[in-house]
Image (cartoon, rainbow, N blue to C red; front, side, top):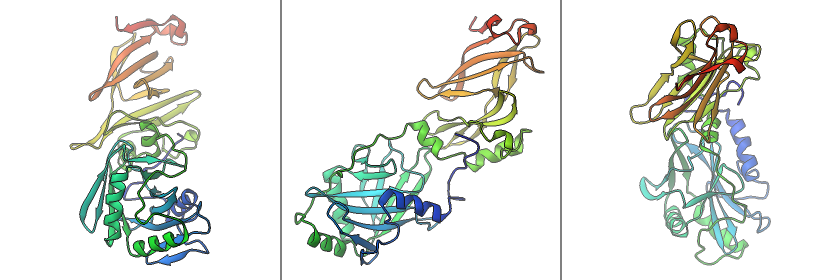
Length: 354
């Protein structure tokens, strides 16, 4: 990811027009009624063909009122597909969603009861029993609220009007062949794999709180510096609520120095500037909050950094750390025994473990 993505949390989101465009791409233009759509309350029915037939309504984020969601029902063989499309930060694939109608909890939709089809932002109810319960409650209610957590455990609430749903379903049944009480099932669209945890976290960008900490407590170059235009920004999930953000500090030739932060959105939570131990033949082991040429291996959970010196504080190093519980544990550290070998990594020695 290039510098600098900004998290789309409650204080700032993409412009509504951009989000609407994203939803248009997801659902073929349903963020505004198609030319031939019939309107039933707050729902629009477009049934030009059975394959494209869809009854949908736009949903809003409860706090901001922004139109970030779509809820849709469409024929799927002899069943109906119930879909939630998300233009906001998407629900975490490994966490449950709460569906409430008129303030009453109807069902906690758990992983395994929903799946992604067609796109990673399109969530379909795939459990027949859950779908039956949800649809029955929706047909008898006025307002649906879907509460979920995103990949960094931030809470979101999508609200939808149910006015016109029942009439729209009756009209749909009159235009396509459906059983009197159709079940909810997966759509004909191909199922797609969920993004990895770090991919989902990286897609959320860097929260303002982390950027503010970086700006206020460091003498790094400004994050909008032209020097960082093509510089990668490692973002990785360290656990269910802990996320690593490596923000570039300086660029010199092929060397990029980073300051690293860990943000925890758990019960206690907070932001921590991470510090690391480096070895230098002149000074021994020293502490630093800057690492060079940082990489994070998501599969191995391993952080690596490398610097070919010499430099003012360290002559050179090649090191790796793994995340354990609440901190990074050094796995290996290599560096010169003499600064005259700083530019010759082939002559470096292992400093840890001895």
